[in-house]
Length: 174
Image (cartoon, rainbow, N blue to C red; front, side, top):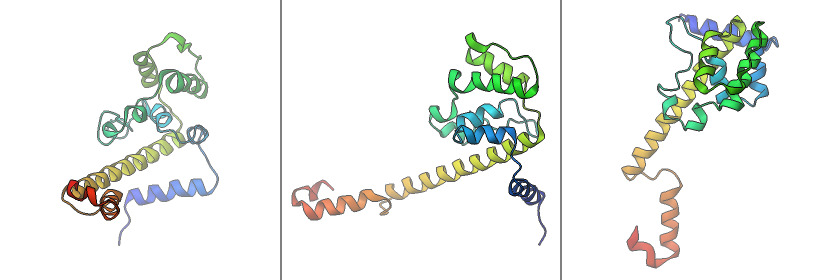
């Protein structure tokens, strides 16, 4: 049985974490409570080998998430990331106080994270989170179709049964 290159990359990534090596981006992400909006901000400007963004909030599965999960807030996420990133890149710290969302995205795209450890962590985390979101959507769709077809999945059918057992007047409504 042959191992794929992605298995080797995952093993290398896990080895670096078992040795206690944490990238600056990972430390920041964890310090902010693994907030997906922080992760989205960290990934702005980063592209994979194919030239596509690490996270496309307008693509699947991110577009199916609530706006508060996939849209970073200007003052809470984007502006602090600009200041943090400018410090880590060693460039003059801009003053984004009056910038709008488009200007913030423009600056972050023009000044992507360059540290290889950070890029590796962000790439793996983006893949991990996207996979989790895709699996959750599949499970939600499966459960919704099962309920539509009358399968007893989830708490609602059982609650209805208990309600019918307890109260005779509601039997005809179910």
